[in-house]
Length: 325
Ligand code: DGY
Image 1 (cartoon, rainbow, N blue to C red):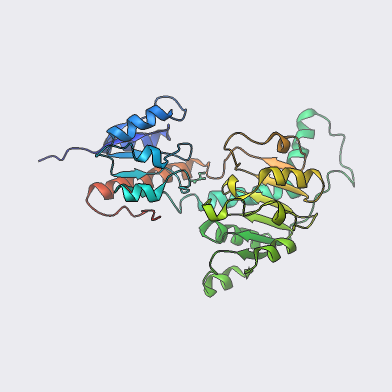
Image 2 (cartoon, helix red, strand yellow; image 1 turned 90 degrees about the vertical axis):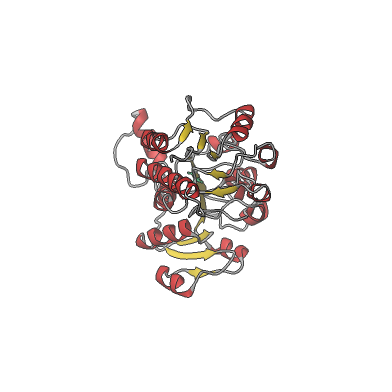
């Protein structure tokens, strides 16, 4: 006897290969336009679906979850970060939440290094010069940046991505330091040759580069606030490939403009795509449009993870990437 297929609603366009596979396996409603769903479309989706596949551009808050119908059983997020989902409310309502960790670690860590190099070696300024046709040839004093080899990198958040950044930074000759809620196991610390700082303030004050790699949670909101950003050396730079809310963006812009911080490389912003104007016209600030996980391979693997989570749930087991509040 054939089982009734689970009804799955996907809120955004996904890579074609992922959409095709989802359609083969489930009774899936795919998005036609590449735009986020409106609130009323989301409400309709949670009322009708067994499984919702949202992305970080959807706010799956308590208000939405409490409007869900009896059918909704799993929110299989297409992405690792779940700060846009009220996981605690979902749990109270008996709705499971899963995500896609691991498959975007290397891509995000690569982008972190790209931002570190872009800011310290002034790559966008060089590119702009070439694109405008303004380059008049090599000069001993032109576009001098800072060497990263031998510099101290302070990683804020030593999870999967933080550790992948540490490995890359060590290969570039950087000295790796970190602060984390919990100190990582000694064997990991040793393998990464990473120095642990219990005091975030003390670490921030001594680093040449700070890399934000912790998730956005109520306790990491503005962890890099005006006071703490003010502890950075004036020659230091900060990069963020995690979530914008960890840094007080206005304070960062102010300190960079005042020359109290040397520069920043940001892939994520406090208000999503509404990037503070004060950051946009600074030559020593490199801004990217949340591209950390944007590789073809990564985005397909994220889809595979979503499918495995749904399939495992359908087969009556716990999805492997269950998120617990
Ligand atoms: C995630 O999966 O949370 C990433 O931020 C997407 O790039």
